[in-house]
Length: 423
Image (cartoon, rainbow, N blue to C red):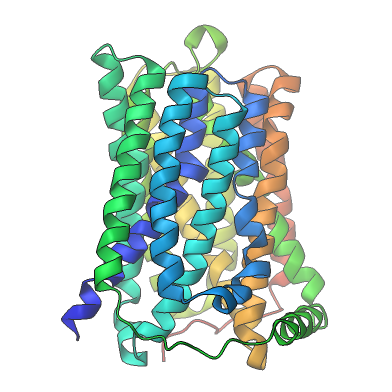
């Protein structure tokens, strides 16, 4: 195994994970800490995921303008500058429209980086290395999540306890993330192998024709309606829970929350939560590789939905113990990791018979996957404010888990129950 590959594969996927975690997850904690309303917070942080919805549309065009290596390094430097600007904007303007626009632009840069990185992985490694580094890149991505959602948030909380203002503490944290992205970009400018030639650029009309063919053929697939229903509604409850879980924990006890400090939130969600999420995913992947997707469909559907009930319990009882809250988060995140395995394996299975459009169909499904999280998430804050309290909102989330079971019933016979067994 080439040592040169070790010099860039882990760092590329670490650089993929940090911005995504900051934009999609940590932004919820940041904006709640800055006292943004739940309605605005849920709308904006859901909107930040729009680039991942649209990524399948522009990813095929990237090669026309530049090499994948060029896009990777450029986007890392752009994100470095973007996080620094976010810190400056936060200090000067607070959580105003300038910060929201910068975060949205960072999201586009991050999604572009993802597309270039995944493409580079396929041409920078031979087939054997691609298989070998699958676990390495996944581990690097999870470490990035712990670094962003856990370590950085805990550092911000520590700075606040040391009497730094909320805005200055977050500005410092974002500036640190920006500096890290600059360093990674400089590193990749030196270490990414020059595997791309000055390249034959595909014609624009050919790209659009290929995309149109892939798009049309996807909607001609047997049972595509059932598959889309599953992709859009399997996580309907989770898509809304994820936007209000952190605000509930940070909300003062006088307003119905748990009154946790931001550093405690980073420890619970960014460290314990991520570890349990990873453990659930590893267990789910192992079980499907042993028994196939059919045996574990219903247990995984239950695992991703039923543990959401812990938030009903937390909202009603509002325990003082950090350990009780941490145990609830651990259970919910483990269930989510376990149940999400079904989601990903189903998409792989549904795309497996798509012939030359296999990759394009999978990319389209990831776009619909992001859409299924974005639209309900945008409405979740408005729903919570209309209900007027957290217990009622989390009961509403439990009602929203029912479609997850219904769409699972729709797709039980659309893929082979033996799919996923390791041969």
